[in-house]
Length: 215
Image (tube, rainbow, N blue to C red; front, side, top):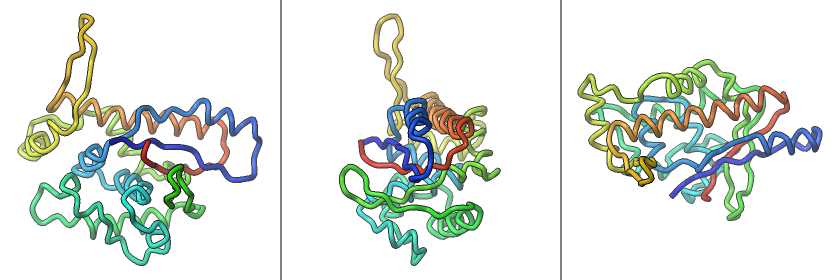
């Protein structure tokens, strides 16, 4: 199952600029749930932004997250979102990260309805102006997610190697890719897609929000 991202605009602003942003934005083919778990094994900020935006698809109250009553979310029960290292508490860390992010964005989150009628958190594009968030995107674009030089990378590959696949065309034939290569390709893809849309945002300098829903 995949996710796609779409733009949520403020009412203020040129209609022509909004259309241009929608046309130039590229959210690719979406993100899988397994991609989210993979990213969380090494990243802290992007996964929290992504899964809170997916909230409506998980059947959880977006209002509860927006009001920060608690982040006891269904994602923490999913096998793909379980820590590999012993002693890590992703729920506690994600709650801290969420509050840290909220304190650093200049505008509020929104609750929007997706095409299926579920309420979703919509994040402002300004969240990508936070250095720590952009550092994670730059890591995805410029460095292999897995280097297989340490035991932790090997554990990540063992858990996600068959869950996250890629397809290439070679000599007119479809070639399925798994393991370290597919993981690195998936991580780089997420970074490049996000960076492309950040550049579109910077080009037009108009505030808009984004959320994630089932395609």
